[in-house]
Image (tube, rainbow, N blue to C red):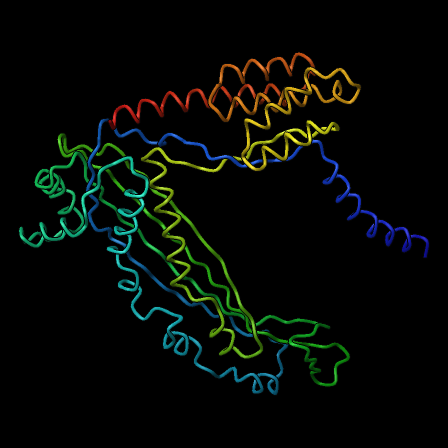
Length: 386
């Protein structure tokens, strides 16, 4: 009994302890927009054309045998004789012809849209490319597309052509699962007078994988100046006593493929063009009103007000302010970091390390040095494109 009480007390106290630690932590986080360089350098390319991607899908359903423990009466009750694969393929939730269910033209449209939104390159409209291909009576696929891409690029007057391919797969696995002593939808079921409550449910596990590859071909040289492959996946499932309902209620594959494709396209754009991203920055809390005010200003993006509050801590000789000085100095370093005054930020973080001896301030210096390299790359990419 004593051990049980101790365990119960720990279960009660632990969540409150975690909450207390989180509420009284000396750090908090703010989110700032940061311009990042492209991961792939493609030289002095300014104008791009995107050909339609080759995007092929597949679908597979695999069904495991029911558990041997399932008695015949229960099997009859759940209508196990249903032709599940045939039932699945007849529903809109499943692709009849996955090769054409999600055309590659959709991917190229997404690619062009994201490139235009990014704004780093000039991008030829897809209709202009389609009209040119129709006029020239070109059939673009596989090796033919790669050979003809330079010719198309010259006609369009672009620096490079993006050729892409990819695939997506929908793999479903259906199986019976035994649940003991559990409710399902508020219903209990006994089998053969057993004392145990046995519930059999049919679960469908859906695994969706998408892959996207692209090549950037220079029109001037015919060389591939960049090539990448990206992957994404999503797993969903649904279960029910009735296999028909389990299959009907499983999340539809096509919206998921669409979202995964969006992710892959966005990742590809970030690889080849400078882009904005959201960066999480840690700032220090404190005991004094000035420290607390600075944190609130920073959370709302009022950084000029924030630094003024933290600077007052450095000149205040009250006991609480003296204890907050290190944190105030660090926060001022963060201010200079997000405003790209990196030499000043590095100097401040170095001072923080010398005062405290804590490695977190050395880590901040390393972060600044990485950011300096990013800004050098960013300047080259932007100047090359102008």
